[in-house]
Amino acid sequence: MESMSRDWYVVYSKRNKETQAQFHLGMKGVESFFPRLLLPGAYSGKQRIVPLFPNYLFVRIDVAREAHHVTWTPGVSRFVTFSDIPVPLDEAVVRFLMEQAGKSGVIRARSQLKRGQEVEIAAGPFAGLLGIIENPPDAQGRVKVLLNLMNRQLTVKLGIECIRGDWGGFVPMLPSAPALL
Image 1 (cartoon, helix red, strand yellow):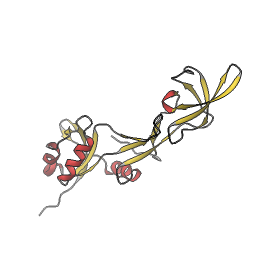
Image 2 (cartoon, helix red, strand yellow):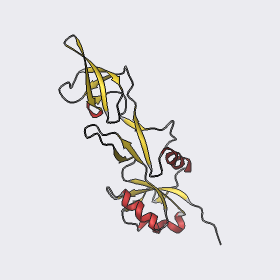
Image 3 (cartoon, one colour):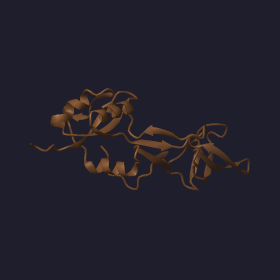
Image 4 (cartoon, one colour):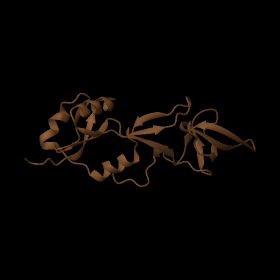
């Protein structure tokens, strides 16, 4: 009896069907990983979970013997291929992401905003003004910004979505990620 060599492959899911695809893959005995990102909620105070790679998930299979299990799974659209051939993903990439995630596949995000960093207010009554980050985002995604308004210093608390700057928003809490795809 030959042993199977399983590699990780990238699968493209139907729109917003990653969880459904992962469920059905699991029912077929196919190992899958759907990494998601935990973001703080700016207005509701509730955290929200969003896909790290929307419409993509990883499956670990012997492609020659098990590809049909994936292809005919509800929620799955197709394999990500090059010249119509599914190409295995470096296992270190998936392992790295799994190590950052909890059991449910969720990675906690953090902001790259730093105290003392200059940013532009992008929305609201202070739109267009420059300010200095006084405190980085809290658990609700609110940032304290120091503004200089009419020769007075004013501290305002804004949602992170109202800030524009060279900071890239929220990113996964990853020390140093290998090249992903």
